[in-house]
Length: 140
Image (cartoon, rainbow, N blue to C red; front, side):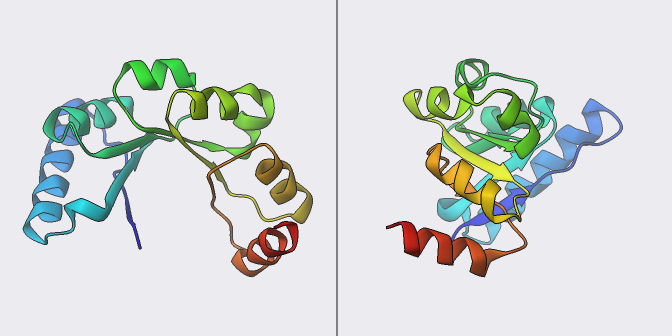
């Protein structure tokens, strides 16, 4: 089991830095650091997370950076909307070659699930987990 902790963007960098500091404090205080992964739409939040916790798993959500850009920042994954990965299908294989994790969201239709699974995506965010599990077990 993994804890996926999304830190939402705030109105200014000071508020984002404070949110990151408090989230990290709570994660450490509750001894869940080893199985926590952070995600955010804010590049600044991702940067702050990486600075405070260089070993933390940090995936970027916004979809405006290539896998090479994400890797250069020291983050560990891309977590992009399906429309972004359809526009840039090469990003899945590029990310995997760079050692980044890949997640696509929110995928609820069977053809889309099959498409991303065949493309080699690591994780799928869906409102239809039973359908996804059925597809995965039938394809194995």
